[in-house]
Length: 165
Image (cartoon, rainbow, N blue to C red; front, side):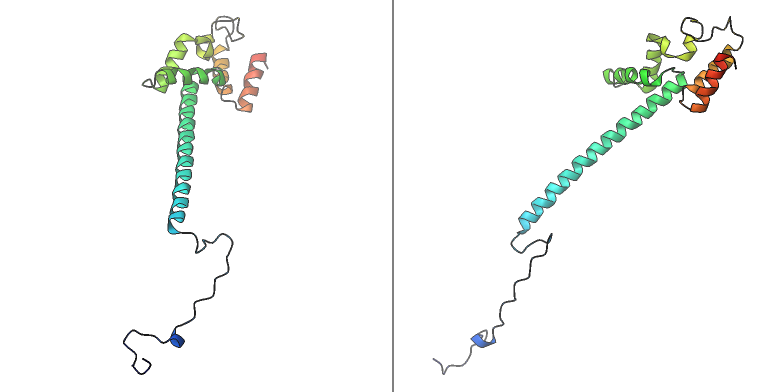
């Protein structure tokens, strides 16, 4: 029926445009063969990985903040060796989570008074100044507190005062 005319919507074979040429693949780009479901699965996996890393970072930050609080409380209480006292306070808090840092430090001070400078002042055998034998005991005690901070100048001043220089 070549004599019949074109019907609306009919396209003659010579007026159809040719298909576009294939696009060369670029490294790292999504290929047309990758379906939307694959891309969504990759995004979900990446999101899960990032959420896990965020949870780890928050956990580490929380632990560091607690360690900072414990260290401050131990310094305020006059701990002679913070590195030795800190794990004991941590164990106490882990055993009784409702207990605060200050309560744990107070409990440690009662159970192990030798870890604190103020409680060691009268012992004599530990090398700490004996107030009855040494008139400079209060000065040495304050220098010892400063030296416990780890400041090299404070440690040097304490050691010189203790030697009598």
